[in-house]
Amino acid sequence: PIEDLSRGQQQKIAIARALLTSPVLLLLDEPTTGLDPRSKFEVQTFIEELRDTHDATILLTTHDMYEADALCDHVAVVHDGKVVARGTPAELKARVANGSGKEVTLEDVFMALTGKELVAPDDAEPVL
Image (cartoon, rainbow, N blue to C red; front, side):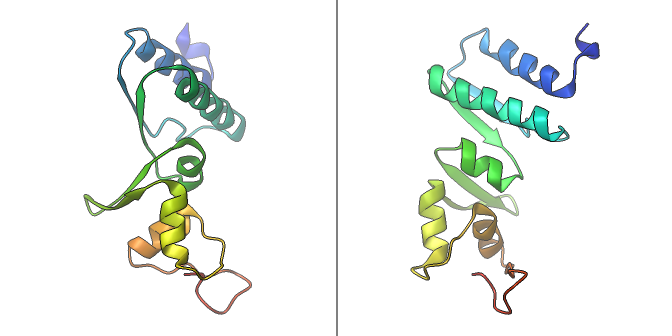
């Protein structure tokens, strides 16, 4: 029974079941939330394979900015129910870096766009 499988295996089965109808749009809401690191990696790898082999748009919602950076071609940052920025991960990071030469992550982008500064532990100045 499916209940005997790990949460990661259950997530992969749920995604595979959704693909049986050959959708043109696949909605994945927080697909790796609550997974252990190995299961999270396996589900992310599975999503990458889907992205590369299926002719479908995958809409992924996540709070994990590293996951968004790795899996998404385009990102929309939502804050207080509104899209505050959208673009490729590289475009968003470049916008926030603003020629500073600092390496910026999507997490930095989110913090900058939501009015919070992220301070590097070994720096006295904000990263942004």
